[in-house]
Length: 314
Image (tube, rainbow, N blue to C red; front, side):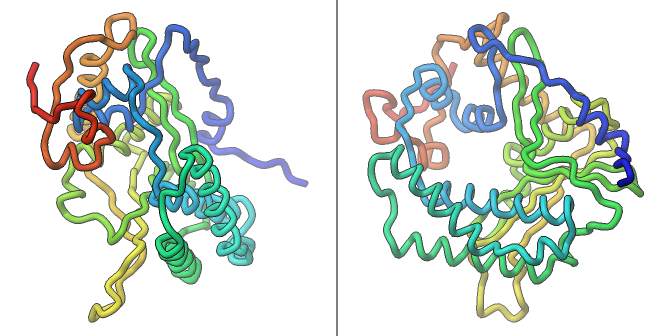
């Protein structure tokens, strides 16, 4: 059997030794932490410093996790074996298994049911409809020739400052041998896709901009040879539309030098606001960004003892 020939970026990833974090005095921060802080610094403080957030289970989380894992398994088979092998997969059974297991896990953690049979059936049917749509269009959506799978849940762990590390897991990444380019994808499940306003949301698009910048730094790869894309799947489509509406929405945000700098500056502002010079969370008065948008899904909105929903400034 011929020995597999690895590309330069594959060898960089294969040989990379991630730093070890001593959680006694070192912290890892993620995009989700930054996003929470950007929405409301006080909410971040209650969640990550005071540890006040109640456990929240939702059918959206169950669906999103089950779909991610099913799609990632499909992609792994497609690139590590073949498109034909991927086509033979029983994605519906796999999704059903993951959907049930994740729901059972969330139910046990929450201690109660957080949905009903009708809603569960609706979300499950939506997932099956998406998977069927993707599978019948595999050749149009995924390019296999001269493309290599670099990883599923590919870890990023990079030191940013004293005892502070950036931590992330890329949903999947591909390498184009002909173009010598890396393609980083983040899978999003959405009800009807992203609106133009969502695409213009710098806070939302910052996630993949950070991926691009920190992937380049971690693996010593030319940042200009990296493309980032949101792989957005829609649970619902307008059945009565004049033309067929695709279940997939691909979105590549602008990720040039200026846009990346903006995302990194904002992320570093979060770290400066929340951690001291040795990396410890700061105990102080945080901005309370009370408002309809930031409070709508806040787990503290009905707890007057923790938050009176009155905006503050610092």
